[in-house]
Image (cartoon, rainbow, N blue to C red; front, side, top):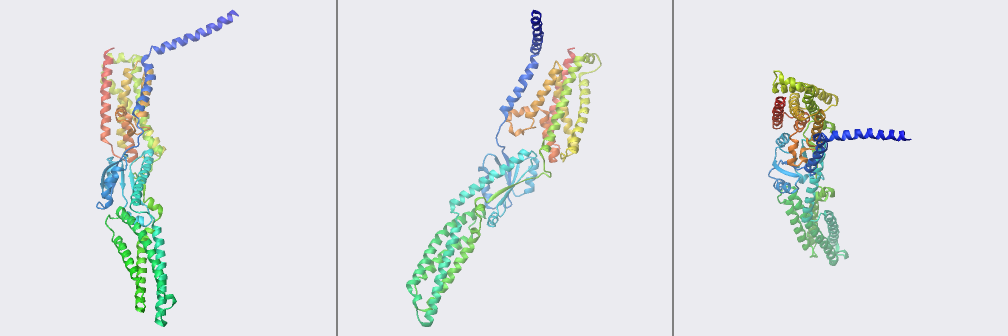
Length: 528
């Protein structure tokens, strides 16, 4: 029994020895421990501080064919008060020029206002705002679609509020009142015709009693009073409608409608006197005929508005979103350039990070020191070798993505080559700096993984740079992947030329890293 207990006790002692050894080994590498724990924590901390879940504000230029129209005059007021997500940049009548500014990146959106809004709505059609963008990010394309719907709904709401303030949109009431007035006038006209026939043959009959005629006239007068009230409301609406969607000037038809109502009232007054003479009856019949003509003309002038569908009145505008790009992109197309850049940066950076560490472990650094070899020559030789290796790897990846997966290549292969070389050059600088400050290959790999994790969050791979707080973008612009992703997407998916304002800072950044790596290597060789 005792030997069995002793055996089991020795078993736990041996296990605890390894436990203590590994714990001490970890504690002897505080820098590695700090990298493993603090590195990811700091990345997530800065990402949490810098991420802004705010709707993107779009710089918008408006295209209007008629710069003298009332819509143009009201555009400044509308565009500047619709909301913070719409930044009013300019207005023009040159669509091609506006789209060129969109391609150059001066604006984010081109909004072409509809023409002939007034007649379009009268045809029971919605006036269309055409929105043009140059986005390749499918999430941003969806955002612009939602952006268009939201702002068009706001415009519709404002127009509806304005029209209902000016006049009640109940045009069907005017139609019913006109029909009733015409029926009443027709009944009175038939009575007077019979009176005229009776008077010409044998004198006035019972149907021509003055009281009966007066009753009919009073009924017609009551109908006309209702019509006058209904039409006046509708005229207010029409004037507001014309002012908002027409040329902003007073429509002559509006004045004509008011004159017609006054003439109808005058003719009704003349019908209140009935005479015994046939000539008077004929004059009154002529007055009724003119009255019917006036009502018919009034109905015709209101008919355009009477026929407008309620849904058109409530939502007179809609938006259509179009891309000026020649190719429709898939989600894979958008992420492919970013994947290439991240892979190249990580692989080349990792190889460079392990380079000097292994040279130090193998004792090659002592040989470099005693050999007729300078630090600059050593570094240039390593740079060239890894650049060649990275270029071959990039050619393979690009071929697989473009020819194998069908990702569009709209730009120049030469421009792509320059971007790839610049990304590799800058990535090698970071890699060699990591290699020269690391004591072991484990540390070098950990630093390389930290750079990769930082690139995933801050380079624009997953989220656009516009979602990050301005001060935090310093981290983004400290990564070669940020420059490479922006440049490669523009060239491959937009067909753009090499963007020097982004490319040259990348080259300068890589040059600065090269100089720092050279200084660290020279100091390291001098210490041997």
